[in-house]
Image (cartoon, rainbow, N blue to C red; front, side, top):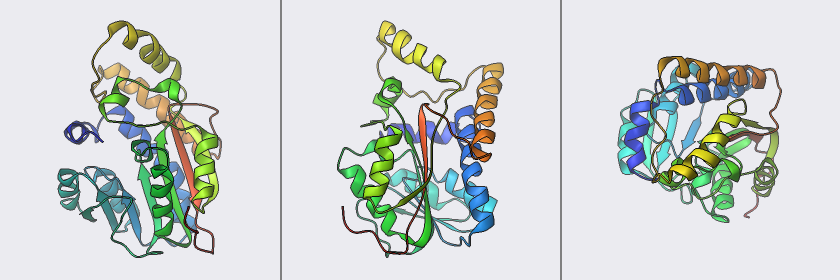
Length: 255
């Protein structure tokens, strides 16, 4: 990720509608998981500032180990309550295999090129104990690529079919797979495929607050999607993809 985006994330992730809505969706997956499984050891890869890791630690009462390639992000994460952070590459993590019950990868996979994406997912799978779970969110569908995508150095976007194949190739058993940020997709397409090409604006971060009514409306759309996901439903398309997968009893073989 572009290191310049770390500061933008730090300013926006607590209150911006997108981050708040994505957390609601994450809770829709994680709440049932923590209710039915014994989860005591949690790892987040590509943790950025560590804010989400701290939210998970506080909500579920578990310590979270966080890792990020960016040194500044790792230092910020290390100051969070309930978070132990290190600077590390997901392709070469300093942790033993089968050391965690839950692995989180939020908007990380899109920053790897083809081939390295499978290696990163396989490394994440190796961290899981048998029966452990991985929750992943990533950028979806090339049609939604934007100038924000360019600014954050996003290298690829995924279809549900391709992400499912990657997870299976990494040795994981897919439990749930759905697109999200679907309801706002028409507005996103208008912006990304019409306005941005006409404006010919340079790549820039999209993490800017909206006028109050729009913030409320957009957050309400994501909350509605989170409720739909909580009911076990899926979306056929959208700007993001969620994958919940489980480590089977046998450890994964190298890709």
